[in-house]
Length: 102
Image 1 (cartoon, one colour):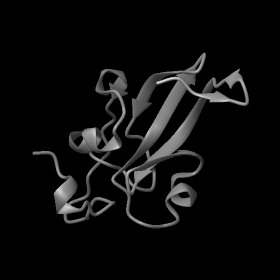
Image 2 (cartoon, rainbow, N blue to C red):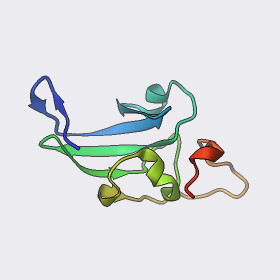
Image 3 (tube, rainbow, N blue to C red):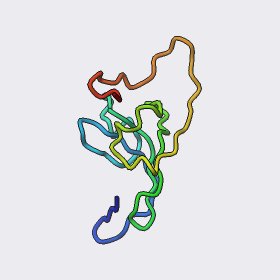
């Protein structure tokens, strides 16, 4: 995946959300999602216009690494991050059943 903005190759570390099949890149996660559920959220790193790494780091959504395929990004560049879990606390977002890995 290579990304150019007005002919300049992107080199950045930014947030992303996958929502309704669309990939939204920017910051912060909550603003990108409009406060609504997403299929996945995390951070993505570009260098020379190429995606070099992406993670599930999102302070708002905290998606589990098991759902990473929902992001629709190259799995070879995925670096999972674990979040502390709280007994009885739901994980955000509440995923749609049709988007769960099979």
